[in-house]
Length: 338
Image (cartoon, rainbow, N blue to C red; front, side, top):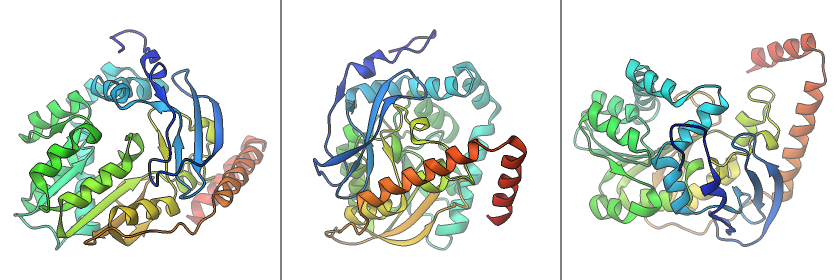
């Protein structure tokens, strides 16, 4: 574990393990990228499942290693370091209340876009990866609903208790899932998984727990960046896959794999938006619980996903070869089109 000085992630590298696909369990995969992470100085390998087309890190750190990583906020230190900021900057930001207010507004947009008329004061909302708690607080302000969640960062758990008065579950979903299902089985009206699924060791366990704790008329809202629409798109980040390799993202999602895992967990997709109106630069899916999860077949071939990655990388390299004036012109045209 790192202290207040330079970030040291050797404890993650020392506890790496090979895994099968965390979504469908298939042992068959194809390597997309192998090399150095763009931050943290770690060697990583990303593969795509040849069955369900999910993209994941293998080998990846163990659950205990990731628990240490998030619990002690090495995650924040890593991401802030990549942005040229310090951990002290994060603490100062939280002291200003700006991050909390921003998330409150996102929670209110979620209510406006998806759950207005659905959530009542007696309903329970559970957030898998509650962050600073702003989403929950915003929903409670509007509906007087009951709120709870789970968060791996000790700092955020304590912050939520201080700001909202709610004792959420501290830790990872993989280790305390049984406690959550024991308390909320068949009781939750809305489960939220926003921006946290890509950080989890076992995203399917999260979604299955969401199914277990949901009421018969329960709903699921998930929100993550899309590999193609956000990370690689010329209209957005324009990153090559090697520029996405980072230890805090053991998963990358795209629309087809997103649908697959949600349906496999026992939810019927109702609405999909590749460009969220709730959280900028994310895709979102709103789904309804079905009684029994069914078998789901993946219609997309992994070779097509690999080919699309290669095509987009070629477009990015070509764009970067243009003079700066031409790049600015193209960006203006793309922005006007979107």
